[in-house]
Length: 421
Image 1: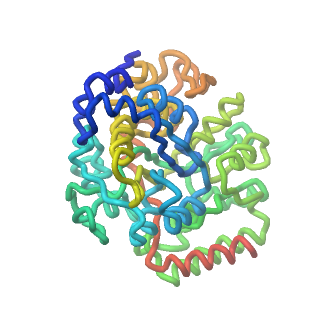
Image 2: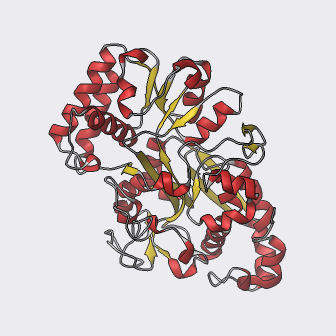
Image 3: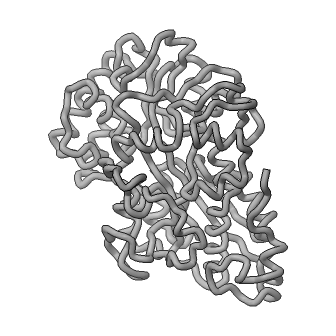
């Protein structure tokens, strides 16, 4: 397995030339000061991982303090406490809420070494030239502003990004096939009375409402004009269907955190639910049969990236750009792809994965040997294939993105009423 990439030695030896990204201080000054730099990052538990912070210290020399919060807390902090963080690791739908506050600074793409290798989803919005941009808050629609002081989103590449994309996935329902005992092919199964008391959805309104929409449209109950930007009437109809299901005892629980979803599924209390890819990984690592089930209506997708506080400047800002370039150089991408995610620059991740891992996770090929998680837990045997197949099979069948709607405040109020009902 290749071990190429940035190292502290190469950075100290060659200074700015090691990255070719931004105007860093002279090597000797950088060497003296780097150990005193601490960058404060917060985001969800999806990607705020201790292993990443440890690797940053090893490769780059400075300290990355990570705080993991749930999505609602991440949104609130980014919107109201700009001096409490240096780096915001957030999803693109959150960016739509946070950018208008002015708490983040636009980033110069000329300082991003692998910018040209970032997949089209985050630039043009299209995975391939023939792709159709899915409904919802697609990353490309909130990914650019006109300049360093831009306050509104641009509809094309401008050289200034709101977030530097890092991670994304095609989400679906997690199931326990050993407890269900039959094929699951549609989002409608989430409300199938067969699973009364053993179903769950996540209690994060901007994500949960999209899962609801996938179910309601699959049932033929609602034909949305745009699932990612519902009218009040569409919101009311969606909530009414799920409120009735809730009153009939369909749901065992509503979860907010990764650990909650893992425990519900691993215990068998829930057999079908909204899930995230590493939660599936965590359940499988316990030796429990758990599948991220491809569904005929397609996937609900999401993407995240790194944003910089408006307060960040000087050497700390230089270090933040260095960190972002390191992030896209491959090690983190390989780590995240072993959890079932995708890197914004997948080709650099390949250098940090074996041929077996790359074939399984990215190309959808049968494993040639055991597949393990980043922590070494066995996930698949030789001969098994990834749920949903290859990168292009999965990301090419995205039906919607997590979204913030024009009627967001109304939707959130209705969501809270649903949860409290």
